[in-house]
Length: 250
Ligand SMILES: Nc1ncnc2c1ncn2[C@@H]1O[C@H](COP(=O)(O)OP(=O)(O)OP(=O)(O)O)[C@@H](O)[C@H]1O
Ligand SMILES: [Mg+2]
Image (spheres, helix red, strand yellow):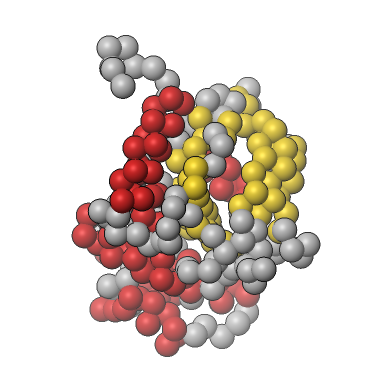
């Protein structure tokens, strides 16, 4: 069994004011595997991730580790907004978790991660002096610094140019290998390159389509046959679940 627990999600329900985002949502995220979550804007991907991270309580259902242990302190969350604290330097943000826990921050490890995300020379700078993509890379370094067995990431590479995005995907795949990862993305190619399994959320209240397995071992090359074949199947599933746009043939 993987030392990283899977997540057993059972009967999850969430309502904001009058809107039921999802109801009776169940899925098992296998331990040690990379799952990608896709779906149209506003369908509830961030809401689901926040519930899984324990940031928002669901009104029904449960989220449990499948090894029977507690999920407390075993989940890292990288939000859709980078949530860097403006008054802390980049390296101060990367080591924030340690400071909050009262642990001595491991500056060498933080510097090494900043070097991996290409920000070695920006460690002392404040977040507002960084570009959007740099901020996202700093947030990625902070998530990796946390070194948790379960990692939830909400569009972590969305602000990056194509080349940096490919580099950060490879970095995340390498450093998160063997962890239980749920990655929200709008990019079918990214999902097919990085994930063992694809989850598509659609409708209102949102429902999950049957998981789509991606053959082979991630990270896959952009021109990997499995990536290309699964991308087609994924796009079809996304289009089937998308609200109709008049005159748009699919
Ligand atoms: N704190 C909140 N209060 C009220 N409604 C909310 C709140 N957060 C999200 N919503 C609503 O819940 C629905 C799902 O939002 P969510 O952010 O989960 O979507 P998403 O799938 O992550 O979209 P995107 O791809 O644009 O990030 C939306 O209709 C949104 O307006
Ligand atoms: Mg979102």
